[in-house]
Length: 394
Image (cartoon, rainbow, N blue to C red; front, side, top):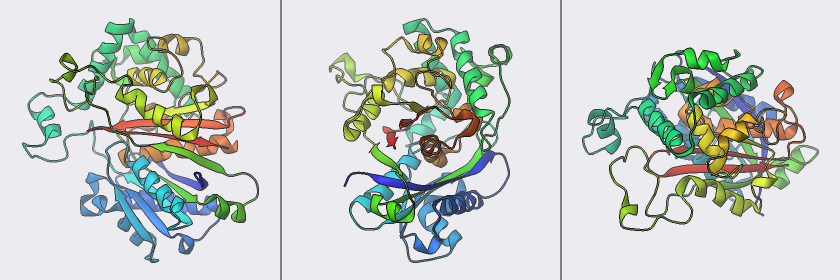
């Protein structure tokens, strides 16, 4: 047995509500349980994705959500991997099921966020993430801007290319009831918005948001007993780290490049994240019908097209311009609307991506439905060598 089934998915809408992340997570969890058609008492394991913005409860999210739903004796796991926290939580639940330790697991990620961009998590001078804010002044939008400049320098990308990504995702997200921003944004709107970190404008960069997502994962046998038909399955989850030397400088490290002395690995870190998932699933980029990628900025979405194998390096702009990643195109990307429409709710994001893939593979996505969707990939990346990709299929 190598697959687990997704029996239920649920979300709390994204936005700014001023409530506790616990409340958001409780709403998403109950929605996922209702979607799965099971009672909370049937859950044998809770995997939480952590947030540092919830005090101590945010750092022990598995037990926090278990308590919020009512203690039932379930096993717990709490994971933190920055933006990849949700995938780590999914993988913890998946591992419990595949090992035979449980049949039913609930995965929950939720966050409440400050106004503006995220700051460092603490004030420890030994923390390189704190140092890049305090010594370099390198906020997250600065980092996104550097990546965009790299794309401009290497491939000739233009601000118009970046703006097309935002416009596309706004068209996708307008019909998503859980999205925060449900309004068509044109390329002209993006280009007219203020610069945040050149060449990126304000509307090129995702907002911070409150929100939550949850999934009920089960053994395939349990899912077949509970519901008729073929369930959506998780075929692979990749959580690999880089191979030394990491040839693409990652935040918070800016000033070192070991490839000056040591040859870079054949497969760079970002490309390896999806490659490991493809290998585990026994599938490849040509099998993918849709993708949910981590569009912290519009330029980063273009990078992901290449990193997950939808096109060769330097060809992402053409893929976008040809309409291949639009709904109705060859392989729609961010049919959910992506972070452009949702904003960042860090521990919930990877789970939300998988919720969207599940909805699409079931054929339940309504106006944003990808025709004939059978295989989907989600991918994102956190700090300090955290990356994750998941492949779901039906």
